[in-house]
Image (cartoon, rainbow, N blue to C red; front, side, top):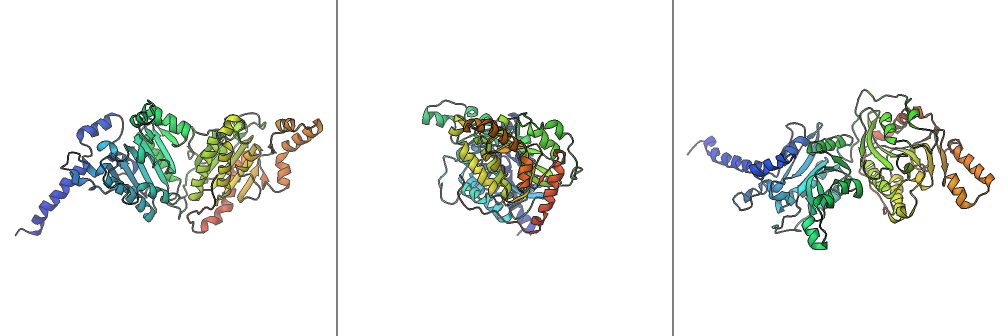
Length: 506
């Protein structure tokens, strides 16, 4: 009888043979074709997401028994595992398009669900990368156990979830995107409930995959995707950047990030950016770049609902969520897309304990037949509920104007849980703008002049009733917000918990 090491030789040889089968993905030709198209292959995507050398694969042998079949499926078309992102643990699942078009087999479905369970159990973020054809037609046991969509729904709000769409994604696989907190599409990506052949057969419509569900649809029009990236590497870099603002889970707080720009400073240039006349438009993005810690601004969903800017940033090294009207887009009037975007963003900020900064400069909710048909009122109501339910520090600043429900959805309501409520000195307030409102109400000239004067002196009238805590010099905006965050420091002494919300969102 041979010695112990000799007896292991055959067993370990078989282990290595099976590992080699898994590593080959869809074979040399398919993998090369993927790379030649300008994309990373699935294993390269996993390696790019995690810190160098930290990726550990899970479930690699799923699908291994198909090696001798007519349709081999290494790793069953899903590269899954965990690693470190900026030194912190995370999980990932990457569809492998080179294996049966990235379709979801029975074992792959089990791996997807396993990832959601591990993320919940170990309380770490989950990143999914999509490029696949949905459920595999040859599956034999669909519905035999809980699936990944159920797992994602239960995981929501417990750990950050990111979805990258890096090619064509159809059916069941594509549904992971709207169930995630943050969705990035690459330039050549597309996603849809059913692909062009099925669309043609079902409704007689002939479309390309780009027309059906490319970035111009989901980034700019539907809002299903949040940000657009040029290619795989840029999308993966966005995922890493996004996660850096968040805690690992809802039981923790975001880590503080030290930099050369965490202290107080006056914003002297802000007077060049913002004209005190509320009728003069300006772009809020310039104000945000000036306000936050240098280089820390990440705008979320910039191409959708542009009347409101939603952004992640750091103030004094602390992660914050910013919701700001952009007077450069329809004077900042809030339409359905802007309100819908902001409501989702506020829910995410609330779930992971990020303080929210509201910068208000709008004439109200968008008016007109198109706005009414789009459901602007209901979307605005949903945004109002989302800001009212916030259990995190709320820092509100009225910059120049705020009318009607447009002020309420931007957290201007007095005594509504704000940590700090501030105003610039030259603001105009009211249930509606004096000119149009007075004309509609057929008020006499003396009454019109009185209302206009009251609106023009709004900051001091409202501060007199303690609806604002202070009226500030615009150049002190950053410093005032830093002081507000210091006031809220006491909250960080208590252990955070997942947010449980009651009621029905509009």
